[in-house]
Length: 176
Image 1 (cartoon, rainbow, N blue to C red):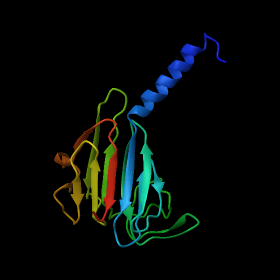
Image 2 (cartoon, rainbow, N blue to C red; image 1 turned 60 degrees about the horizontal axis):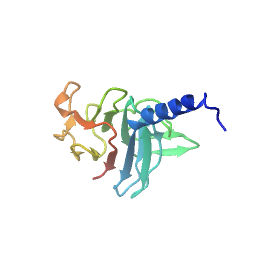
Image 3 (cartoon, one colour; image 1 turned 180 degrees about the vertical axis):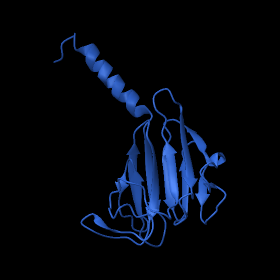
Image 4 (cartoon, rainbow, N blue to C red; image 1 turned 30 degrees about the horizontal axis):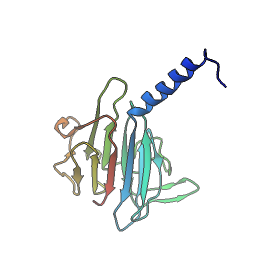
């Protein structure tokens, strides 16, 4: 049993852990395409294979900025291989951004003292995959063709960034 002098320390640690996770976000990534997609994410997620109809869930900590994208035409053996689009140094689990073209779902999850998350779809790196991206408390974005109106087309196209309240969860769908 913990002593009474250690109880405040334990309580503080529990509260700190709760506060740190309070702004975390869950991303649910679904493949609605009639073909396999290999989604990738940095700095959280890495990558995986999603057959048609499958989902992948990724938990992203507060204070994280990153991106997810779909890779196509991939072939992997033992975690190494190649993708026709969105390839990330020939790895199944990405640690670097994918090569162009790649339709991106970009995000910033609010950290301590920031009650907002930010998200967008970007075609600045090209278009390779139809995608929708939404948060549980914000606008649903959809990009099903190159130069779609919901996506960044150039790097300063800041009207395409949307905000969600912190503690939101996200849905990315390939072939919405």
